[in-house]
Image (tube, rainbow, N blue to C red; front, side):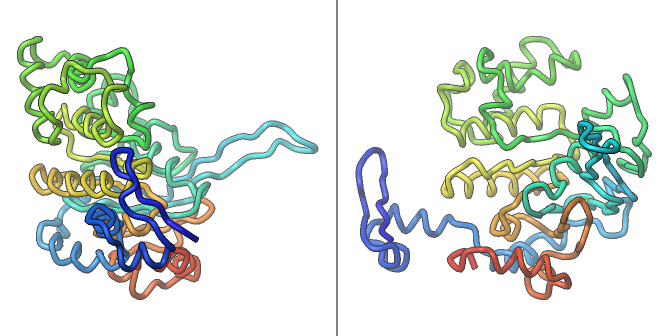
Length: 317
């Protein structure tokens, strides 16, 4: 009914919700409102990214009839199971962002873990850069991990609290025996600059950083081995809108500079409109629709997709 806006411990704006959202009196409130993702952003995204996506070449990732079935504890009668991903086929082109959307429990995160071979598929196939990696194991799979990385939803949970920021960023380099201490430290400085971390952060620990700064550290760590493909699993959902906007802008800049391909897992269609070139919609583990972001947002073919779009608050439209 009413909204109170705080900045650095002080109330800067307050009043009836409609008034604050439509006629804010403080510049900070206006910045927060401007930072909120909007469904209409797909028009700008499509215009700015179409030229750099490779349509004719081999997709960097392709999954075919991918299925994951989890056994459940025995109940009454026969043993039960859960099909988390059900015969999904899709591809990620080089240089593009494919967003995977759906309700909680739709199989988005399981699909991401299957693509990165963090889960074993029950059936189906996964190829990366034209190579079948469905059953790759051991050192071959380990070496392949140089080429793809994951950024998780909670940067605080994914960063070891006992390691400094420099140690966290260079951890992949150390794991793969890359360089000596001096070269790794130099690389940490380069990566921290690329993700726009403030000076003096490398000697600190995760609990001394803000949420947005921690996510920048997680992104820097993911980039340490110069991967070609990143999976972003709800990577901005834990951030406030102003920091979220900064991270989305950073990801877009890094994609253009490094020609990265992204698989973006999210439930937020506003974020999808800001980031995605194409969209895949999952429901109960099944792929119900996949297409260009503009087509999905303006002319969805499936009732479930229309329901997801209609559920977005009008303010984000």
